Every structure is written in C-alpha cells, then in structure tokens.
Amino acid sequence: MPRQDGNVAIVTGGGRGIGYEVARHLVRLGAHVIIGGRDEQEGLAAVRRICEHYKEAKVEFKKLDLASLQSVRQFAQSFRERDLPLNILVNNAGVMLVPEGRTEDGFEQHFGVNYLGHFLLTWLLLDTLKDSGKSGHVSRVVNVSSSAHCIGQIRLNDLNSRQSYSSHAAYCQSKLAQVLFSFHLHQEMQSGGFQVSSCAVDPGMVDTALYRHLWTPLHLAQSVIARLLFRTPEEGATTVLSAALSPALEGDCGGGYWANGCRKMTTPLTFDPQLQVSLWEISLQLLNLH
Image 1 (cartoon, rainbow, N blue to C red):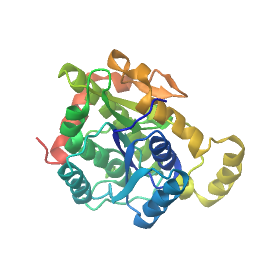
Image 2 (cartoon, helix red, strand yellow):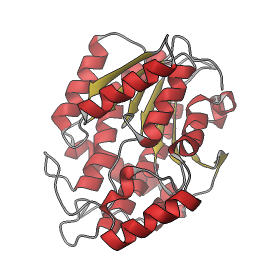
Image 3 (cartoon, helix red, strand yellow):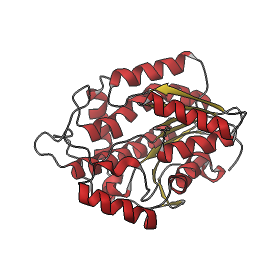
C-alpha cells in the first residue's frame, strides 16, 4: 500500500478489533489517525500500543459515541475547528445482536449506531472530504458492512423495529442500510464532480468482540469455532485497507461493494434507486438535516 504521509484518517471503533488493525496500519504508512470511540480507556490504550510499535506515530483518540447524536456532532465540530484535511473516513464501529434497546435519541440500537450515527458523521464531514480530495487522490469513505446485508430488509415505515423486534433482523437491516447509503453517496459525489468516493466492505467472519451478545451456548461454540475458522482482526482489516488505500480504486474504479479484496455483486435491492433515495431522505429528516 502507498505511503500516507500528510494524509489524515478517522477510524470509528479503532480501539479494538478490525478498527484497531486498520488504524495501526494507517499509522505505519505515515497517516495522522484519529480514533473515534465510546470507551476512552480502551481508545487511549490503543494509542499507547500503536506508539510503542511506531515511535513517529501520529495517532490520537477522541470521544465518539455513535448512540448519541450530540456526541457525533461534538466530534465533527471539534475536528472541523482544527482545519485539518480528511482523506480517509472509515465507518467501522458497530453493534451486533444486542438486546432490544434505544439510543440516547430513541432509535433502535443497530439502526442508530451502525447506520444513522455514521450517516450523520459522514454528512457533517462531507465538506472537508470534498475539499481534501484531488484528481488521482480522492478522499474515501469506507463503510464496514457485512454479508448479512444480503438477507436484510428495509422497512421504511418501521426502521426502528417497533412493530416487532428481532436482533438478527435489526442487524441485517442496519448493514443493508449501510450499503444503500454507500452506493447513493458515491453516486451523489460522482454526479456532483467531487473528488470523493464511497464504498462498502465485507471483512468476512472475524473473531472480534461483536459476538459477545450471542446466546450463551452459541457464544461458547463460536469461541471454539472462531479460533479454527474465523479470520483474525488483522486479516479482516485487509479488505478495509485495500478499499481505503489502493491506487487501483481511483477515478471510475471507486465505489462498489468489496469482499476478499475484490469487487463483488450484491443483491438487486442494493441497486434500487428509489429505495436508496427514500432511505437517504428519511435519514435526513430523522437527523433534522437539510
């Protein structure tokens, strides 16, 4: 991967798992990395570990709770006030199969954290991304999704799963929403002539703390199977890094859905222009954006 000296990257959920490995490798390549996360102790520990590996590291932690729109707005405002460029935004943080619950603003947790919080963050940083992109060096938004999006359904009249709740269905819906958002954002940037690309990435089955909410017997089985069959966080970070850094994805080659280091086809639902626009407009309304 090319050196990233002078470039600035934000990685949400960079305190552990895939996000940590993405942040670590970006730092290794010379980028100035800002880890956004909810757990300050975990985030600061990640910064210390990275600095132990790379003495010239430019890495820092900033508080970011995607379950709080106020926290997202404060994080984005704090970043914009520093007048830094933003070359890479990796929307990685997420929750999976959590019990039914609501974010600070009343949204279902999977929808609120995995999708809506990242939608707001990207929107608030979009002008900076536009200003930072150049021909041959576009700014990149990488949304870490999942193959689970393939069985997801978008219920536009019940995005917060109030009519019925299934943690699995809610997770799959949030991952499908991420893909729809990625595709529509990329189209918007291309049609507007901006040097910004947006893609969705499936890191594969990775042994991370995301599985901690599994039913106890399944969690025990998963912990055994994971050591044999799942990817390590470092392996899971490979496709994310490729999408964020590869020179092959400049210009018309950007965007899309990526898994195992390759562009992959997704379900027809993800290409539905009306669904993309409807979800985009509803999201703007939910967030009071114009």
